[in-house]
Length: 170
Image 1: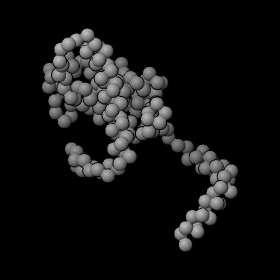
Image 2 (image 1 turned 180 degrees about the vertical axis):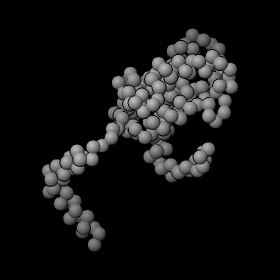
Image 3 (image 1 turned 90 degrees about the horizontal axis):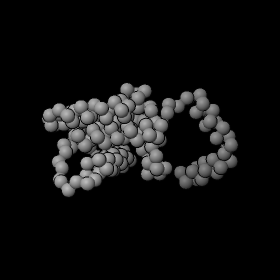
Image 4 (image 1 turned 60 degrees about the vertical axis):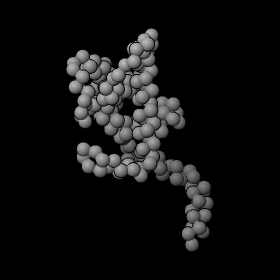
């Protein structure tokens, strides 16, 4: 468990969430580094300095592009921009003054994409299956039906488990 101080106060985060956020940040960083290496750094010997918030916004834009490349579009239905729109907005901001990327609120897309990912994706999808997996809403009646079928089909195995559990508890 970790506690983070934010603009909204203290937030407690469980270890699985912290590990998932770390993996997501690493993935966004890999997308960003690969993109920059292909476009800017490929043949250049110069050292570049880019604002951290620009890199966060670029990572968020590229993550949206990754989703769309893999035919995930739920982010658009949730109010996030498409990759085309996000990249256009980022390019417009980059064309303005460097202060576009300074301050606590200078990476709004990054925050939106991260929140959408935490709330809608299987946190272990990428490391386990090498792809993002979006989780959908559950139809409660269908879930209840599937649960009943599973429990009935595996009632003998579950009975053994319950018997063992009862013996361990008392």
